[in-house]
Image 1 (cartoon, rainbow, N blue to C red):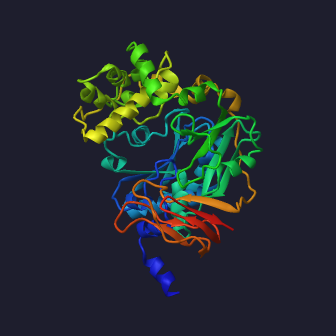
Image 2: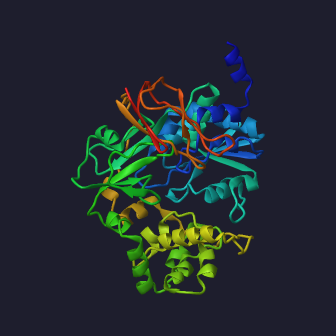
Image 3: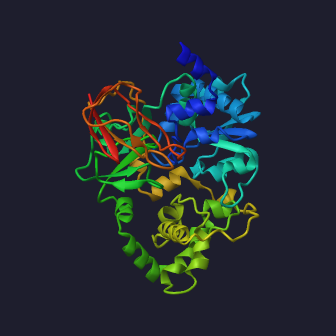
Length: 446
């Protein structure tokens, strides 16, 4: 009872830290840090603009009350007077659920258009508040705290003393029955695919996190982590996969020889349209440089959000400007080059007219045949083996608190970041025996 009283006296940030909550939309920033700030508005990001993914919509449909409670708890923690749920108007069931849950509260629903990338924080904050985040800044710079809708559900549960042990993910693409699942963290995608009816291709490639911003892998035993949003499976021969699998040196060589500086990559760039100095066509010029100029032109990538629209949609020659921008940002980090460009963004006059509809993007990606609902599988998913990476958030990896042969119970702390280091505690998603524990991962078996 004494321990319970101590827990009840904790502030929300400490409860969330103890629960190991991180951003559930892919970024994985430890949520307790955001709850230590002071803000004017708390925004729940339910835009979910990656084609074929549905986990955020399903989360809102299934857990709207907890989500709204999490928003209100966060508002109290940061001193915000306004809470906003950003959700696409086309997600009718999710909209109905969150409107019903927020009725009579100080949380409102803001309907968003069906374009990509509506979930970019810079775009969402501008739509909700009318304010532009300073170049290189984060939402708190304009008084906003933004989290994924699933993160707010986890905040509410953390306030009840429940650690983060499960994750919502969508399994879509070349599977028999696209589905959204709630699985223990550490479940392999191979097992998740079984609950989506199995594969419809003999040579699958996984797009982990989505087609646009995700990473590719052919390892079906890749585990679900705290930041997983889902996986799109496509055949290796699919045109989008063939492009994604081209080696970096080949991508750069093609760009060096073929880029004609048409500017389409820049003119459709969502950050450029918001007024930020992001110009991928200028970054492409660095591919031809050998000794001078690259440091200057790399700066045009500094505010790139890596949405992939330039590479997978706008370039008429199917070049790789997004990858060139990724490389440029890596060079800037390695050389510790700071942004020295303009700090006063002004929204482009054609910003609304150049939005890219999701259906149009899906057509360009050749995935319209895979654009199907992915309803929630209500069956309890309880794997016999979990693979738990010790790094599942921004910051430093956890240090294992267990060793091979240890028996652990559900919810037990099995990994912690070093004292005062940015990171998130890791809990056992099931009771079992530790089969392996090293500096990279823990394998847990029933």
